[in-house]
Length: 610
Image (tube, rainbow, N blue to C red):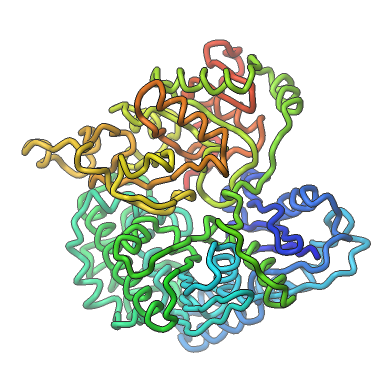
C-alpha cells in the first residue's frame, strides 16, 4: 500500500510517500520552486515522491492531507465573532479567500492531485488528519521507541496549539490539548515580530540572539503575558496580543510593557532586543520543562518524542536533555509544517489502516536523507551545460582533496547524495569550513551567507568523538540538540572582553573551535554516523587525520532568503554568486579561480530577505 502525504496552503508545503510503512521519499516544495517557505500545493515535491516510488498517482492508494480545513474555518469564524467588532478588518481580508478557495479545499485538493502524473487513472481516496495528529504521528511512528510520550507544540493548527499524546505500537492517543489563542509558538512569534524578525521564518534568529542578552524581562512575561501552571498548561493574556483579531502580532499594551514600539526590520540591534530574546527563550524553556515533567508523570514513559515548530528550538531541547526527565528524547527532523506531510502519510498507514509497527533499531528517517539525488553522469552533463569548469576524481581522492582545502581555511560547497528533509543541512547540501579558524564565522556570515553577523554556526562532529569536545554524549544526528564545549577546550575572557557590548563579543575566540562556539560556549551539535552518511563521515575522518580535529563547520548551502540548493545548477549558481572557494558535487571538484569570470553574478539581491 502506498500513501502520499501532503502539507500545503499555509507555509512550508511538502510531500512525503510511505510504502508499506517504509518512508520512500519526502521533500519541501520550496527546494524545487526556489520560493522560500512556498505555501502552494506541492506539485513538484509530489512528482518527485512518485518518481522515487516508481509509480504514477494511479499507484497511490490514499492521499493524506495534514489538517482538517473545516475545523480551521470554524476556529476562524468563532474567533472573529467572539472578538467582534475588533476583528472586522482581518475578517474582511480573510473571508473572501476562504469563501473562494479554502472552504472547497477538498475539491481543490482532488483537482490538484489529479494533475499529477497518472492522476487521470487514480481511484484512491483522500484522508484528512488533524494538524497536531499529523505532528504527533511524524514524531512517534518514525521514532526508535516501541512506546513513548509525545509532545507537539507550535503556533496553531485547527484549534490545538499544544498536545500531549501517548504512542504504543501502532496506536497513538492524544490525551490533552491546549487550544487557541493560548499558544507557546505564537508567544515566541510575537517576540520574533517585536524584535524585528519575520514570523514563521525568523524564530531561529531570535534563538541565536538570546545568548547575547540577559533575561531581565522574563519575570515581566510571567507576571503579565502568560499564566503558567505546574503541569505546563498556560493561558496568554490577550490584551497584549493582536494575532487573534488584528493584523499584527502584538498590541499597544505589549509595546508599553517592553518600552517602545517594535524594532523595524534591518534596524540596528540594541541591548533591548538581545534581552528580550534571552527572556522569551528562558520562558519557553520553563514551559517545555514543565510540559515534559507532566508528560512523564501522566504516561509513565521513559522516552519522549517531539514535533511542531517549537520542537525546532534546539536550545530548549538541549536543556530538556540535560534535565534528565526522560532517558531518551527523539525529535522529528522536519518538526514544522513540512513534516506534517510525513505525519499524515504515517497516520494513514498506522491509524487509519491499522497496520502493525515494528521497531528494528534506530529511527526510520534514514538520516533525513529522503530527497532527490543525481547520478554522476547527470551531474557532469548539468555542470558542463552551465559552463562550469571541473575535475572528476576518484572518491577517495575527492575526500582527501576536500579535506586539504578545508584545512587550508577554504569555504567549501558540498553537495552529495539525497537532499535532506527538514530545515537543516546535514552534510548533503552544506557549506563547510574549518571550525578552528577565528575568522570563519564572520567570513561565512558576511561574505558567503550574506546574513546577520551574530548568527552562530553548527558543528558536525564524528559521533565517536563528540564527548571529547562537548558536554554531550548522545546521538544528535539532526542538529536539534545544543550542548556546551567541554571546559578543557574553552578559552577564558579577560575583563575587557567581558565588558564588550553584546555582538562585539562575537570576535573573541572562546575555544579551540571558535567558529562553532557561541558566546555562551554552546553549540548546536550534529553527530555524524558512518551508517547513515558514510561519505560525510569519511570527510570528517580525513579532516581529523590532518588536523586532529573531528569537526567541521556545517551550514546550509544557500544565502539569506534562498531555499537550500536542490540541483547541481542551484549549487553552481550559489558558488558563483558568493565567496565559496571550492564546490564539490559528487566526484566533481570546482575551483573558483578556474571558472569563467563572466559567469559570476550578484547573488546577494536575488532573494527576498527572510
